[in-house]
Amino acid sequence: MSAGLRTPPTSPGARLLGLGSFRPEQVVTNDDLAERVQTDDAWIRSRVGIAERHIAGPDTSLPDMAVAAGRAALTDAGLDPADLDAVVVATCTMPNPIPNAAAQVADRLGAVGVGAFDVNTACAGFCYGLGLANDMVRAGTARYVLVIGAEKLSDWVDWDDRSTCIIFADAAGAAVVGPASEADIGIGPVSWGSAGDHATTIRILGETTNKLHQEGQTVFRWATGEIAPIALDAIARSGLEPADIDVLIPHQANLRIVEAIAKRLRAKGAREDMVVADDIVTTGNTSSASIPVALDHMRTAGRVRSGDTMLLVGFGAGLSYAGQVVICP
Ligand code: UT7
Image 1 (cartoon, rainbow, N blue to C red):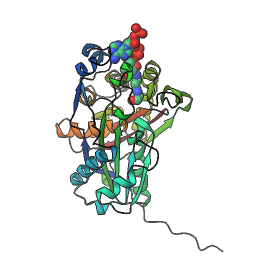
Image 2 (cartoon, protein in one colour):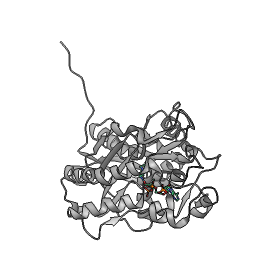
Image 3 (tube, helix red, strand yellow):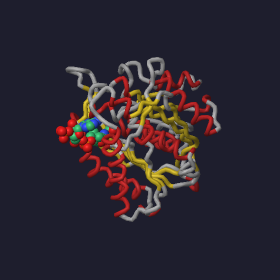
Image 4 (cartoon, rainbow, N blue to C red):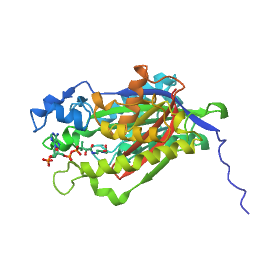
């Protein structure tokens, strides 16, 4: 007869303890891009909302950016790397599938020997990683988890394709997740899913250029139609109403998509004074990094305050999507 297996002590919930981000120094303006492809500043601003973006040089790798953002989040949380039990890196732009990013990022941070793995759900990656970290902490698998979204999209962009090179950029953003008591739970249940029937709409053209290709209009229509209901589901799973949301941070794919999601949430009761992220204007679309980078920038700018109720929702290649309500640390 089996003696039965032991499981670790669980936690009532989890919360965000610290935030950090990193953007490479080099700024590329719309005018810079117009020197290479047929485009102009007015088109990019009006159709996508981007004024400039940051691009990493050859000496800055994806793990370099992830380490910088992760270190900043640990400092913000007041924790040492040795306190971590796991490192999760959300990314879809490692130069090669092997090795993963997380093991080397953990090691370089000084979180030696911890559980470390990558999550590839593209622009939904940070919210997927946060959902996993939340569950790991609640289940007692880990006490402190570092979740990083890091992308070096510039390696995968066709710089002669005006429909994509104007959008994507490089960055990393991070959050430390730790245990919470019943009274201060700060991460709500994740609402996530996938639409694999749309798999070819955003992909690497492996058979030809090995560069990123996107069916922009198709993805635009999908995002403006399908993502607001996911956001509303995340609110409902947390036991809240749309009017409870102080801050909306959707993946920074296109400012028109962000505004369309905000409009649909307001039609369902979200407040007019709900703060809506527009970090894409100066950061571009950085896939899995866009949500934590926007969050960190908004907090630094004083647009988001400790204790604010924030709705995060990511969506992109896969197609994949995920969202949850979190409390700002
Ligand atoms: O982050 C992952 C998830 N991704 C997304 O959510 C992206 C969703 N899609 C989008 O954000 C938009 O579809 C894009 C920004 C990619 C494109 O904007 P659009 O308003 O949907 O443009 P379009 O693709 O319908 O193209 C309209 C016109 C075309 O010209 P014609 O065929 O009408 O003559 C394009 O060739 O705009 C042209 N065009 C450009 N013109 C100037 C495409 N790119 C550019 C450009 N500058 N950079």
